[in-house]
Length: 404
Image (cartoon, rainbow, N blue to C red; front, side, top):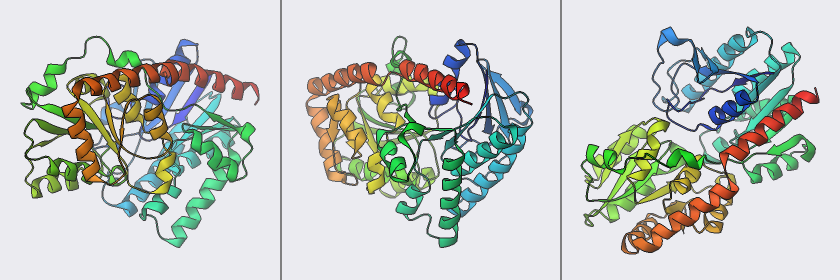
C-alpha cells in the first residue's frame, strides 16, 4: 500500500528534531508499503530554506516532497499562522498531485496540515488517519498566544471538522484519549501509540569526548537540555537555575536546539553574563548520541500550565534511553513515566531554585544519579520501545486500510 503523510516538520536522521515518523515509515517500508511525505521546505527549528534543487528527494526509501512555505515561522504568532496557512495550501497541492495513494495521514501541530490532509483524503476518496501530537489550539489558548475570538472560533471549527472527517485518530499520550472522549469521540475511533525511543540509537559508538572537546568542557559536569527552544519550553527557568550555580565552576549547562525563542535565550544568557551556559544551536538527530554521551545529566522544562500535564515530550525518552538522570520540570503523565522508571528528580515547573538544587544533588551523588540513568533506560526499553510502537503503527495502518 502507498501511505501519504502531510507533516510540515518531518525529520529524518539527517535533520534535527523528532524522528517518530521516520522510524514508523522505515517499518512500513520493511513490510512492503510505500511511504511518501509532504514536508515543508523551511526548517521548523531555524527557519532556514532547504536547497531548492531538492524539492523531491528520497531518503532511506522514503519519498519526501518539499512544499513551499514562507520563512515567517519565527517572526511572531500571527506570522506563524500565516506560514501554517501557506503550507496548508501548498501541501494540499503537492499531495493531491501524488498518484495512486491508498491512505492519507495528517498530524498536528498545527491543525492546518490536518485540514490539508482531510481535504486530500476526501477528494481522493481514501481513508484519513489523523494523528494528534499536541492539543492545538488549546495549548496556544492556555499559553495566551492565541487570544483573538475570531481566530479561536476558526481554529475550533477546523478542529471539529478534522476530528469528524478522520477515519481513525491516533494519539501519542494516554491523556489525549480522555481529552478526545470528552469531546464526544468514540473510544473505538482512537488508538494510542505513545512517544518512545529506539534504545539502539544511543548504544555502541557514541563518542563522549567530541562535544566536550568542541566546547572546551572536558572537565565539567554537564547538564544538557536538548530539544526545541520555544516559548512553551520555558528555557528561562533553566537559565535562572544556571545563574544560581554560576559560582559552582564544575557544573556547566549545555542548551542544544533551536526555535522561536533561541535569540531571546541568547540575550538572557548574555544579559546575566553567564559563563556556565553554552548554546550550541541546532544539531542533527544523528549527533544526539554524542551529545547525550557527553552529558552527566539532562533537564527538561515546560511552562507551568495545566494542559502541559498531558504531554509525552520526545526528549524525555531520548534522555532515558541514553542512560541519563533527568531533572524534570514538567508535571503530569510524563512525570509518572520518569518516576515509575526511577529515572530522575521532579521539580515544580518554573521553580529555578528547585531545579538548581536537583542539579547539585546529582553532582554530589553521582553514583546514585548514574543508577537513575540505568534504571530509566531499562524502563523505556521495556515499555516505550520505538520498535514495538512502529509495529503497532503498521498494524494500525493496515487495519484502517482493511476497514475502508
